[in-house]
Length: 113
Image 1: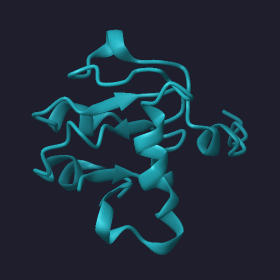
Image 2: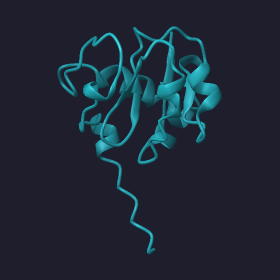
Image 3: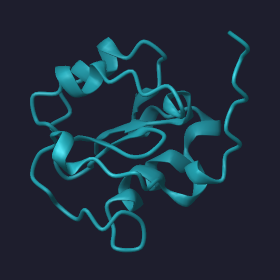
Image 4: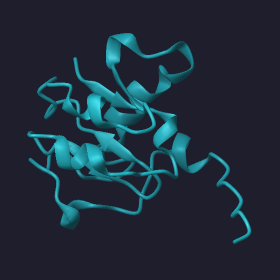
């Protein structure tokens, strides 16, 4: 079991979670962050610091966010990012790729300045 990042992270990517994570298991995609389920140590630090409440324990995901358990897991596979098991995130491991479910979401329109 692991923590999961869900839809509130899309196009927000605050990044505080990556700084708090002692396992460096949170990886950056193009529009959101993803938690590697095999690297997550279930400490919950990311959950406590996320400003948009995008992180949930996988067994406690709200109904509308349940697909994101698979989204986080599949992100690391050859079909999506090809990252596999990198063994710890830093900026050099960031990719512009997103899971197809995330990539298909409409991008928010820019607000006039």
